[in-house]
Amino acid sequence: MSNQNTQASQTNQEATNGYVASAEMKEVQAIELDLLRRFLEYCQANNLRCWAEGGTLLGAVRHKGFIPWDDDVDLMMPREDYDRMCQTIGNKGIEAPYFLQTAYSDVDYHRGHAQFRRSDTTAIRPSDCFQPFNQGIFIDIFPLEAVPDDQEALHRAYRSALKTLKFLKAKNTHCISSGRLGLIFRKLKARHCVRRNGWLHYYEKADDEMRRLADLPGTRVGEVVNMGPKLQWDRSLFDETVWLPFENIKVPAPKDTDTVLRAVFGDNYMTPIQAPSMHGQVVFDTHRSYKEVLPEVRRQYRMSALTRLISKLTGKKK
Image (cartoon, rainbow, N blue to C red; front, side):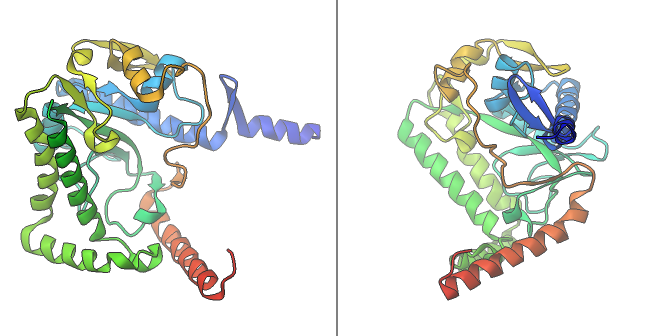
């Protein structure tokens, strides 16, 4: 490699904890950190509890910041605080371009958790490019549910909630471009039902399945819709909060981070193992609003669908 190429490589990449993060990744992480800081201020102003989770908690413990290849921030919030945030507080005190995205604040939002977004940026999943909701860069906020001793009841609630959310997602799925022609009847049914009864009538059915779990005996909690019913922690792990360094700020975490992280990542969680990002297919743009980028992604999505169709008809590989 020439000196010129070496210098260019050093300009476009930055080594962190022995791994290399691209300049583009660093730009995304800078936006994520800004969102995290703003959201924690929002939580403190409204007396909302939350904790870092998943890769964000692991990053705080192992790297004191982002895992070098991680492009998102994950938080969890007790169901009672989560409901108050979504249904009562909402976007009060939040100024553009920041936006708390829930089914109560954004048209046809179908995910089982909230997201905090920057509307002047872009983070588009190609499969979502025909969805009408905000698609700026985001951080995730997952509800932490009560988990009952009755595991059969837990699994029933999980399956029912997931079924409802998939039903709602189908309403705006572009069946031709996605190649999921089998969804056309579910899509038509979803459109008819939502037109007749309203979006929240169905969305709250999924939330109610989770809320009812708190009425059953049990001492555990879990991110049921996000992680599935198998991952459970003792409720007492969240009785006390500690604040851990994360880049140039601090993030809240359960005091016993070791128990939480072992349950998610295994006993060797302190050994870095590079893995693909959960959002590997997302189209990021830190300088343009998703509104400007959406038409481009839609064109590319249609062209990819056409290419797949031609390959299928001709028997040639893409």
